[in-house]
Image (cartoon, rainbow over all chains, first blue to last red; front, side, top):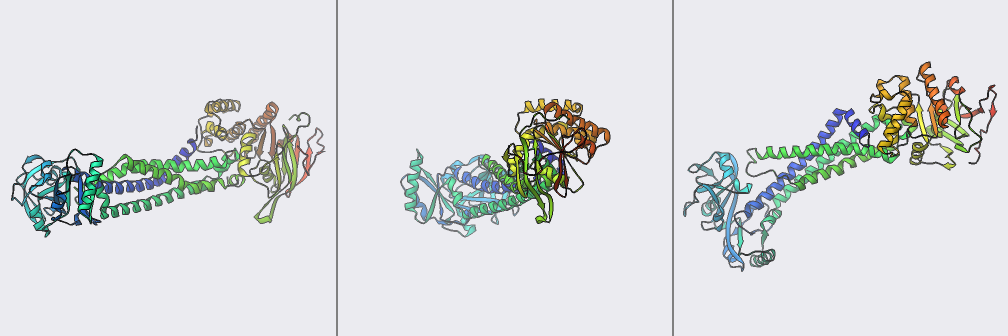
Length: 373
Length: 248
């Protein structure tokens, strides 16, 4: 017998109530994990996707609500190219549209001579030839998902494109992207002379000091624009920050509801076990020890609920990313940091919720408690 | 039961103790002063509602007095935490309704009293084995209280009460729920404890036969001590102090 024997027996003695309370915590944690994980997944995926073709820095509209809404005039390109330490720049238009009016797809439009094309690892077909405005290279995953192969046609932005190549990427973002020539897409979107952002490749060799120095020069050369490292780019997109805030708020509310569930369950348990608490007090258990007993019950339920919740959250993320509307845009992103955050949240929330019932238990006068027997 | 040797110092002292309920409308214990010395056996007797159980609760800190002081070994004890420590170290309890924990088995019901004192597992195990063997429950150690007879439950309650080698065994109608045979058996065990270990016993009882084995009888009526006398061979009252306790 040890300190955990009584709390565990008490929890097992009321299996339905324990299971329901634990399920409440699990759902709360699953909500936190999936919402936070998916939001982080978008950020991470975006950063990795921008970085993969070889860009070191990104110049975009300052404070753009969403990345797609960012507008940068193409006249900025030569200005950026002239900055000392810059190897190459490439404008890019990013747009979210539907493929064949069925699945969501992210389209990246690159200029004909962009350095970005050099990073495309074709597994089939070829790159668009000069002047082939209505040809497209699909990421391997989206091609597989849509059942498309080289030679097929795909409708993007209500324009039929011929699939000329299939490419493999390491980032999920690019695996689900459609890459098209810039001019045609600008025409379709009515954005002549405007790109979403500029991707900047710096001259090698590179170190962090060098990157910082060139970044400073770019800021000077392009006042009023946002110059960021690829990993920081997502942090400046207000839409993602807004989604992150909503996810955090929803998670907190759900977690608070789960805490109330724990408190309610333990308060009922304390009320039902008045005699037992009286007995423990009579045989010399100090109030602090009795309090610990109740807190441990809260902690055990929270911890089990937390572990189940993390698993449930991971499954939820996986299922959400497989839905038609989210495929290719959202991706599961379960990190050890996120798991640790979830478990720390329950390890704090559970005992916190148990404090009032535990305190209530210690207020019982042993004689009164035993009299109810 | 044999009388205690010489005249030891008071172990428990109640000094003008009052216990009122419902804002003073009910006076359960009214200005009671008494003392219990180490190794003494005391029966608290009286009619139903006379305040016997309330007095017993005050003796061991299960309840706190509205007014007056309760001292243990000369030290005034106030507050639940202080009383919990005193109870863990010096008191054992036996109740009419056994007060066992249904989710724990026989063995754990004994051990739980020692857990409160933070004893190590090996020592607890040895002590539990010894107590269950002595009280004839060795073969029942993995059963739960609901599987035991009334007599067995009370023996289990006694085993738990003795787990920490108490100086005082407090018993509230310990035979009240038992048949005569079980009742005799339980009282024989309690008498043995007193004889073998010199444990002081304070018993609340209606049962004259149970009271008869005690050195001293304290009789209550309407919350007041009306008689506090030593039981003698011819049954004559040997008056003892009923007001302020002597200094420790």
